[in-house]
Image 1 (cartoon, protein in one colour):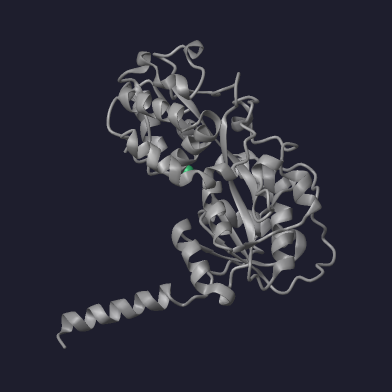
Image 2: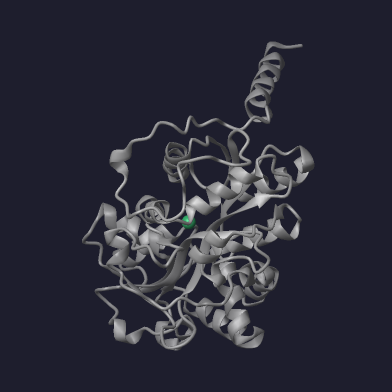
Length: 364
Ligand code: FE
């Protein structure tokens, strides 16, 4: 065997040792820095006994470590229950959960987009939770009607516009962006992104397929340029004068405003005189074969209470799912808005239809 092949073999073995070990990455959830927390009073967690909880809670998460670790650390500090997690892309994580079956390490699946949670639930990977705390803290439209997953933070997808070239009085609905007045002025992210599939899925539920297709065709007609690979890129294109309006998840604008408070791009809450702004969630469910179900339920319940709910807005500029909690100042500065109260499960149920419709409309 040549030296080159030997090196390649050693490299593959090394990658396999790292990636295939099957052990979740640990977090010692006790590295608490209480100074990072600004918080309202706690509503749910108790610091006393943990009945039924056996060892750490293990989470498979598609969220990045810096968005979840501070929450898990805080949970451990309050309850004494440790959390271990494995992060990765949602598709492979769900596939892994399915492949592992009864052998899985995971007690919780935590991911973004109701479409992903819906698909995990449809595959039988999540078990229902009957919890008074979750029913009280999480509005009905942000949780699975069968209680297999619950929204924990809200992600609003709405209109952004150039403060230099658009008067907000010109803006109203998602559908109105299909009007000829926006020709060559619209920038959109690719239709392959689940955020746009979910938006179009809810439009199908609200408007029907024929009307939705007309709207999407109008958007495609109005595109200034090819579609973008991220929300942040076309917010920058709006700021730079390339296009005038777009559709974004609000936290992307928040991140860019954090870097440049003078950015001449603003939010407009869509559909305020009709269905409300399209919202999606990050959310979690307990796995069907959880070994530590009691600990898992405890963690998800705790995440719905005030302190972690505030942290969701602080860490990623999302909206708390719990309507009793006020978000961080920048997010609060965008003002109250009417959310679409259509259950977010529609994003999953109609995802395939939405993808086919966007294809027919030539939205790439
Ligand atoms: Fe995102």
